[in-house]
Amino acid sequence: MAGVHPFRALKKTMPRGLFGRSLIIIVAPVVILLGVVTYVFFERHYDIMTARMAHGVAADVAFLINIEETYPAGKTRGALLDMAAKNLGYQISVLPGEHLDRPYRHSAPNLKDAMQNVFASQFGVAYPFTSKNLGDFVDLRVQAKDGVLRVLIPRKRLVASNVDIFILWMVGSSLVLLSVAILFLRNQVRPIERLAYAAEAFGKGRAVPDFKPSGATEVRRAAQAFLTMRERIERYVQQRIDMLAGVSHDLKTPLTRLKLELAMMGDSVDTAAPRGDVAEMEHMLDEYLDFARGEGGEESQSADLSEIVRDAAAAAARARGAGADRLVIETMAGIVMSVRRNALRRCMTNLIDNALKHGRHVDVALRRNGRNVEVLIDDDGPGIPEGRREEAFRPFHRLDEGRNLQKGGSGLGLAIARDIARAHGGDLTLGESAAGGLRAEIRLPV
Image (cartoon, rainbow, N blue to C red; front, top):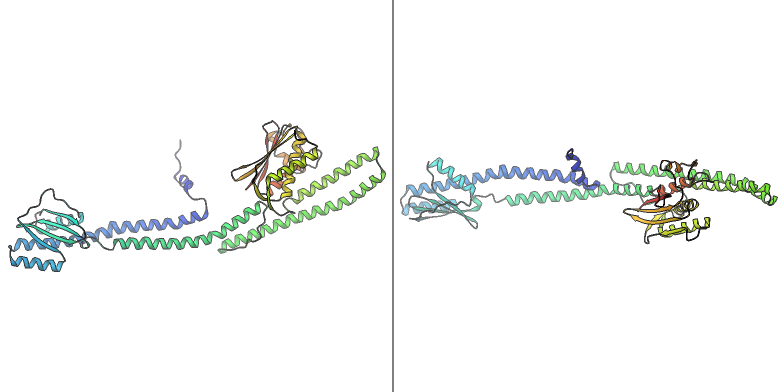
């Protein structure tokens, strides 16, 4: 089994959004910089400084040992030690006759190393010593000739006192800079989010009248390009509607005259066929106009999908004269969406009518699946072979064999239904129902 590529594994843990990724781009260099600065400071500067400070203290202690070793106990040595304590800032005392007990313990490691080095370089011998922390002091005791030399050394002489301030200043300034960066980044990402929302709403067939270009120059250019594209699409749709409406109007005028002439001729065997042809032509013209309308002609509004499903099922049942025993409806309450109500009802009516036309029993179900809403229309009819289901959606196309959902029509039924579903940002697909017939599935994003 091949190993997982590290960059692919890292990609899965990365944020999905632009704001999160941009924030990482800003935070990562700051964190790396803080790590490098901290490492350099503590590993180089801090260690060097503390070593030098400890070396200075060790030299002072060596000087005190020299006094203790050179001058016998008395006023002269006492005066010299008092003068050294005053000038060096230590508390110095000699404990005559005492000896240090093993093991020698050291609470200040940096002082231990410095003392050993100084003793080795100045005396050539090792003097036993111990160190212990006492609050703000380090209690250093060295075994000398006449006893134990005790020196209380202020901790600030061994440890740099501005370390906490340095860390606080470094972290605090970084947090301030990150806060400012996040604030500005949020303002830069917000126009992109508005553009994405407007594009998504337009793809679902919803109006976004208050969208205006804002943000950086590149974002404004993208937003302006989106507005231009939206205007061109809306203009194209409107032109298509106007053209088909004009054609429909022009053709319906002579058809109306034909209907009037046929009505004046009375009912007879000779007029039955022409009347059927005229009715079929009117039905075809209506379907052409519905197909041309597509996404236009109706504004989106909030609607309860369960009501639309039941209205569509009732309309299809009336058209087919189907009783309650042939149609089973199962819906979920509370699914409210912004949709083109009449267009979506026409889409569902068309599909339920086709199911009733070719099957004896039809099941209609409305359900929510994650971030999508699904309308399932199942029948027990002959169905459509899997390889020809996409072919059934082609405009002005009829299936030559098997089940033909558009028999007796213009070949636009499924094309109109899918066009309406896609105008809402969803889709219409065909499959096999549990009863062995056809399943028409409308899937709409919430």
